[in-house]
Amino acid sequence: MRLHQCLNAASEKLQKAGVDSPRLCAAVLVQMALERAPATAAHLFCLMQKNRELTERECRVVDFLVRRRAEGRPLAQLTGRREFYGRDFLVSRHTLIPRPETELLVDTALRLLPAHHILFADMGAGCGCIGLTLAAERPLWRGVLADVTPQAVEVTLRNARRLGLEKRVASIQSDMFFSPLLPDSLDLFVSNPPYIAPEERGEVMREVLDFEPPQALFSPDGGLAHLAAAIGAASRALRTGGIVLLEHGASQGLAVRQLVHDTKNFSGITTLQDLAGKERCTLAHKI
Image (cartoon, rainbow, N blue to C red; front, side, top):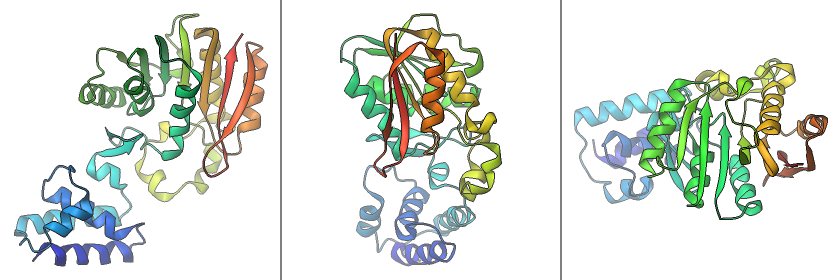
């Protein structure tokens, strides 16, 4: 079977399964099955190699990957990577897959804080995409990236090494409810914690519910428990003038602002909207 025939068949299967962008997804999986690093965009690779004759083994690998994707497994888990802020990050079933809306946290931190020496913490770091991006964008910044899951910590370490950032960030295992951060030590506390209420499970996409780690998705107390813990940790760890920056659900802005206000340690409490016009992150300054 030639590559273009394999690509057409894979696209048709994914389309019937209701997969988004089936043609592009099929191209990525074909490129992966041929064990080619994604140095060339998948659709260009498939175009340039369209008349290539695939081996029986390569056809079997494509079929396996297409079946897994059609069953709902996220493309990022099949490829083992996801783009975030222009960089390629390794992911696994133990880490949340980075979302474009989370880039608002990075944009806001880079806009509000100076380029000179900054010490920050990224709590609930997952694959490390937020904290590592901050360190990559600001060569003088140093950070602590923490996650409760040891497998996620390992993924962060691998990403730090791939990006050449292992000397400027520390990746540790830590529960957000028992923060190890020193008092008055940070200039920035950033977090994308779990914030989906358990009772909202029915509203979560099946692909997310079945394949992404529940500990990175769900939080008690109406989805606010981890956000409250993050605010408490930030209140203790930030220096005067330091910034807390939290991602949350589109309907949680008011509740998060109230949680920050109730600590009585912050001013300038503001909620920002993402590109879809939804309230996505809240920030405040330590007083």
